Length: 126
Image (cartoon, rainbow, N blue to C red; front, side):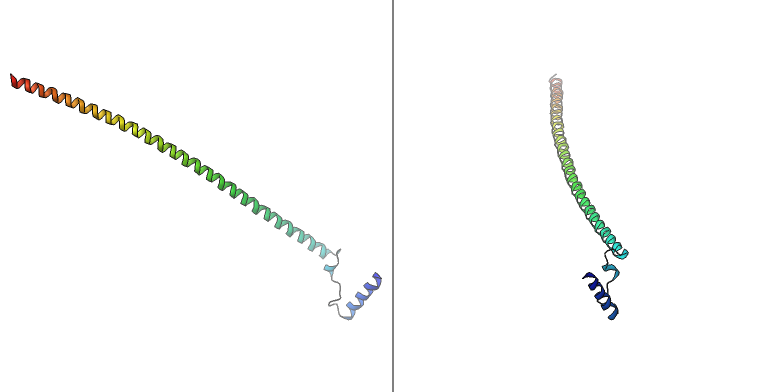
């Protein structure tokens, strides 16, 4: 039977000048052209898979970098807040010391004035 079908296909190919009934090279699974096309298709498929894997890897890396940047930004903000709190505490401490010093200075000035006034009064009494 197969020989009969092949003969019939050859007859149709000759009668119709090739056309629809002619078997082409790319239809033959063992032809070099079909092999090249299969190899090319496999290469394209492999390349597409690799590109997809590369894009996925890039996306994962980008997400990982964004998470790391977010964590780093939070750490930086925490450090800034800590430094600001320390600075405010130190500033308050120095402000208290300044107030004490001003108070002590005012007391000394007041004592000096009092002594001066006492001397002036003593001298005027004489």
